[in-house]
Image (cartoon, rainbow, N blue to C red; front, side):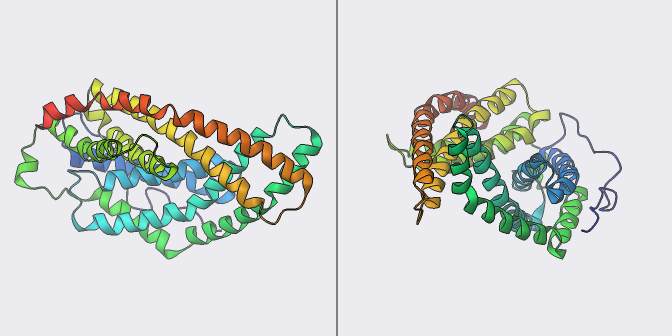
Length: 312
């Protein structure tokens, strides 16, 4: 297995770069790129070894934060934005399947913790196919992390971090408060419009799409957090709660679907019985979280007037 690169290997300074609160968004974007690229490198070895699944989780989260930073208004990254987004999405997909299966295995095993020994053994037989899928997904993930494509992505991220902002005359004169709002405003409006278009009983796929938009808003808010004030901190908190409710809903929906898929062709009576118990629990949990998301959204939406005032 190849040795992981260090920040210095990629041309970054030995210590993380910093920004002042009054620095323009382009500077804060580069500070974010610097910190998240260092985080990506820090979790790479653990992701490869597989000793602690948290390394894979954090590496995947870091990729999402990098994508938010690259795509932020005022980043001044020029023509490298689209290629970086393509490559970060590729890397996220390479890691994503292993992480998704880990979540499902942990969830279903925890749900079965109160079952008796024979029932837990039946659950493990049910999960056998998922374990095999994880092994195959992990082989593909490790192969991706050994490619020149991955190394090239790290190099490109380091170059973007060290690049001089490509600014326009109007962005150079922008006041800090409005610049902060401009970074947040686009993902906020996309989320706001998506919620407004929702019917009374949205399907699971629509709620999952909301969750993704909520994550993008949260990461944008985190990006400007050091330059923002109390409303930004409260937005991060509210968006995290919104995202977590939708995340629990999605996990329950996926778990229910996964169990049903693993049951196909199954003729083991004990496995069918425990699968039924698990499906019942996940279905009830999905409905419970579905009933909470609008209340969480109301807390996020409370910031609309403030954003409209600053950008109107």
